[in-house]
Length: 114
Image (cartoon, rainbow, N blue to C red; front, top):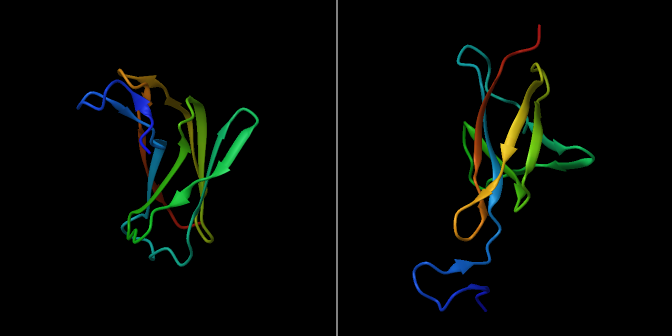
């Protein structure tokens, strides 16, 4: 069943889960490849989730989260042996006729911990 608005023309809205945040994660060019899968945490106030790794993702690894959830987020990327990276004020807002989230795309490069 398709859920949406209108009469099933090209401008119809379809009920889909659109990720509000996509995060690409890679090791710096002069660092060893990532030995384990990074942890990507997405927070907005009291809300917190672990982003989902896309299937068949190869460096850079792609994660997504904040499905159909507007807000102002902090994204934290952690991996064993690397310095944690934090990105503040990642805004996800809705727009357009169907009010889907605008996808905030972030690239994070991890560097080896000293």
